[in-house]
Amino acid sequence: SSFASKIDYVKLQSDSTCYLGKIRFPYQNVQLHDSMLFIGDENKILAFNLKGTFLTKFGSQGRGPGEYQDIKNFTVLKQKKKLAIFSTKIRKVLFYDFQGKYLNEINIDFLPLGLVSSGENLILSNPRGRRDKSEYKVLSVMSESGKLQHRIINRQNEKSLEKKGKIGIGGVRNQLYTLKDTIYYWESFYDTIWSISNSYKIVSKRPIFYGDDYLPFKYMFESNTKNIELKELKKYVFIQYFFETGRYMFFELANKGKLNHLIYDKSNGRCLNLNNKEAFGKSTNFSFFNDIDNGLPFWPDGVISENQVFKLIYGYDLKKHFDKMAKSGKGQIPINNSIHNLVTQTKIIDNPIVMIVTLKK
Image 1 (tube, one colour):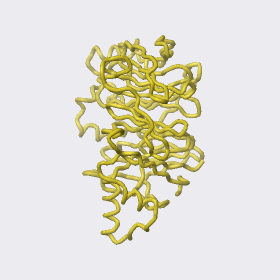
Image 2: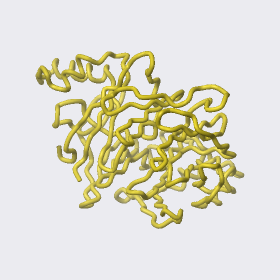
Image 3: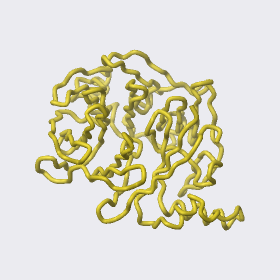
């Protein structure tokens, strides 16, 4: 309640027509537009409304028109009411309308990782170690017809590093996102969030530092991360990922062998380090204590609007949490409570529940 005003739960329809597989990287595979939730696993993308009702499926796996081999990323073209899906194996972007009808596709001759829309164009991020295919530029701007418009953010220094075998692609995370109609880009082991204008000019850089430990560390991004030993990584502080909304930024920090979850309030410049510990597998998850509805502790999986973040929760998470509460004597869930209904009505095999947290402005 210190930063959130309400919580909503979208219990997704679960039957043979709309079962989802493993959802990797939810921050890029769950998107919201016009009361439609677009959710993708590695093999398909489905749309649901905010009541959880299944609406449509976009394309299918195959080799024919409108079919893809895999799904690396997708984005919503809001102005055109289209969905664009990038398939790595066939190096194509495929377009569908919101009813799931296949429209057209374009070929891509490089190996992008991230994908967002900007007006009528697409922006694709080219990951470290693969930028030889994109003139050692980070971002490529393409039209819907497949015409290359711009390439921006120069990384020419990587060319010589690659020749010396001092750079690799392992462990690289790209975050390409829009906020208040501005495009932002960040990649792991760098200290900068890049801001790009509507005319695709770099208009500002936002360096990140943590106390006396500045980022980046030359050792980190000039080395092949696959060969860095864990004991070496524990000497450094680096950002594993972050999410940004209109007011807040949520950071996960690898802090010299320890995990830190931080929330930064842009309105007053305060940064808070979370200390609510919740066991998660063999590790400890630092989360917000949920004092709004006494449901699961919360740390976002991603952002779906300028003041909303989300988390995917599953039936076994809910049951385990409330079994633990009951055994500890912290009380039972009140009958007719919305959380009670979720716990009692959700099966372990069901699709995830989308927990949407509306933030204070």
